[in-house]
Amino acid sequence: MKSFSKYRILVTNDDGINAPGLKILEQIARTISKDVWVVAPEVEQSGAGHSLTINSPLRFRKISARKFAVTGTPTDCVLAAVRAIIPGKIDLVLSGINRGGNVAEDITHSGTIAGALEGTLCDIPSIAFSQALDFSNKKPMVHWKTAELHAPQIIATLIASKWERDTMFNVNFPDCVAEKVKGIKMVAHGKRDIPKQLTKYIDPKGRPYYWMNWADEGVDARRPDCDIKWMKEGYITVTPIKLDLTNYDVLKNLKKKVEASF
Image 1 (cartoon, rainbow, N blue to C red):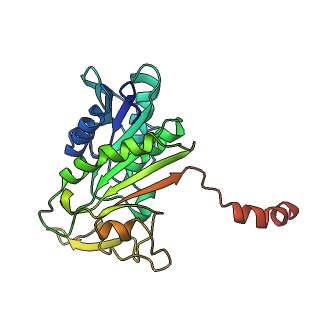
Image 2: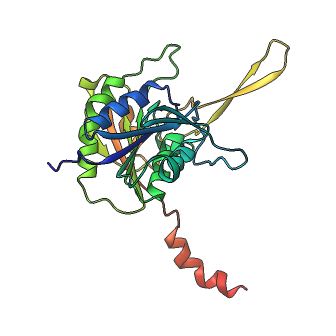
């Protein structure tokens, strides 16, 4: 297998600079190359999506020679790394490992995926990683060893493959110990039956407040062969995500009609 020991790798996340998943992903990156940089948010940015900080300044805190915390989103971190922090060309962006899965419509909200999306926008091959867990459990166990064991080979396989421009990969590890993983499925992203819910609570002063949650993990029957289905069944899922959001069928069908209406 081709050696990637000279790769310059950027590691980022959305759980923040002190997150255990970031530390594990940094260790994984170091099994590939010695030229590893970490640029991650100062505080947790889960749910930040592909947002930018444009109304306040960004500040960088240097932790060590190749490790920085940024007062911004994962997108900010990648841009800061590319434009201001890391000298020269970056060969690979690894984002995660997120505490919790990022499947189905999560791809539109996830800061973990946004870090990889921004790397892709900068023409850098990028992969996002997430470790599923059961949030309904009051003390959920995160099976970090599952991601730690299986991520290196997935990275090696992907970076050794022909990588289409404007495409990133979203990798999710199932909520089980490493030895019980059934295999790997390369599939499209799915959709939940009920994407999000608001749960109502009452504060000590009798005022209502609401908490966003993903209580339903059912799979939309119209898209059964997908990431959320296979991850729930104990498989690692790999989904290629393309930046081009254009619906070309609609473009073709309506182009003449819309343009002629002017």
